[in-house]
Length: 333
Image 1 (cartoon, helix red, strand yellow):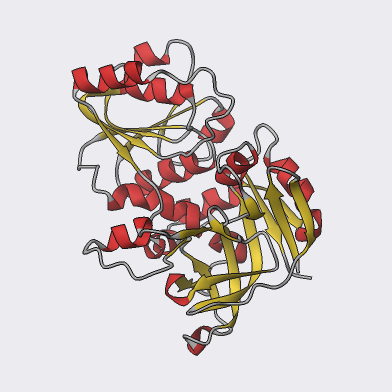
Image 2 (cartoon, helix red, strand yellow; image 1 turned 45 degrees about the vertical axis):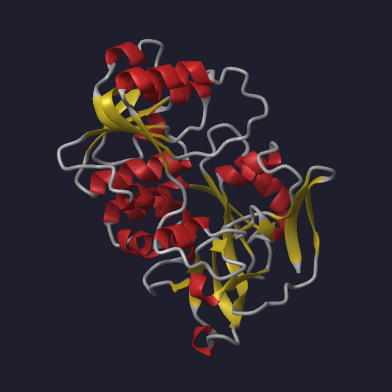
């Protein structure tokens, strides 16, 4: 099968690799469409030391084989990316889903990803896609689930003033989801064109005076850039006793402007702010959210390019171009 791999030694490569053999309760999935996300691009920059596998974790596909649950065969599915390699008896189901010991993570840690013609996932990780969703829309299930994680974490209260920092892929999804959930959202970013993709938010183009203009103005701030500037801005606009939700992973390589821990820690301690990490989220609420017309409209607007797997290297290059939002890769002949 064709697959898009990356290793630190060779860089990204498109080539032929064996079709994966499902193990245990795994299903073999014929990938229909996959997407390139910011985590994939951070991997190219060194986010996962020693990385050497197939990229990708956002996808929609059709189950080709599943001995543990034959009813899934032929179903169009999306899948949660954390895979347990042994039983986890922790009483918290979210801990089990996101943080089980010795888990592997699809396309990120220890498990080949979805930028290939086939992939495998445990049957319990799969959700059947509603018929009314297109492949292009269903391919957003994973990042939209990450946005839903903020709601699942119950860091928001009715009446909260909420800021979302970042007009990239995840920032757009978070802002639109929270608007649709009924929150008052101020969306901060550097590009008016991107901010305008979200319906119902208050838009604010970030400039040199933004931190002073909006100082301590928000109860909850979602930082979705993973950059030094974004983290500093989040600290500045969060009120004392407020909450900062960190939503983006990033490579530690190359950002010489990242604030020192003393700058972050002193602000958090003195102002008694709360920092909450936020990672993978629930897929069913994400699929449910796609019934909302404003969500579907945003998903359509975010896709900047769709390329076949044969042009996988070009897809990676396009995804790294400044201003590009979502690039999807199709596997169908």
